Picture 1 (cartoon, rainbow, N blue to C red):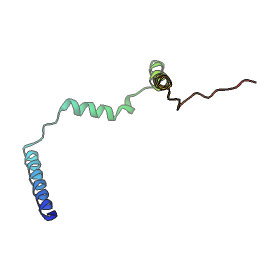
Picture 2: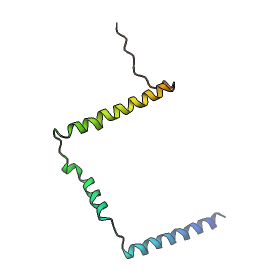
Picture 3: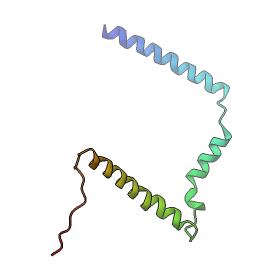
Picture 4: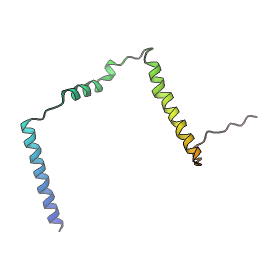
Length: 93
């Protein structure tokens, strides 16, 4: 039984590969807009400039948004009675 399954899988794979190779021989048409976007994305570090106009955006996406999301999830869990994560209570003397 295993030999039969293995043989049929081999035949299916070989048919699949032959279809791919015939498609490639006709040529694959790439989306030029997607290729341009990918190239720009890969080389973003070359064109990114850190200046005063970027600081508010960076502070929001790196600090405020994740912190707000954490607090939102923390409050939702605490409202459900699941007190797994709590802020530490500092006792003043």
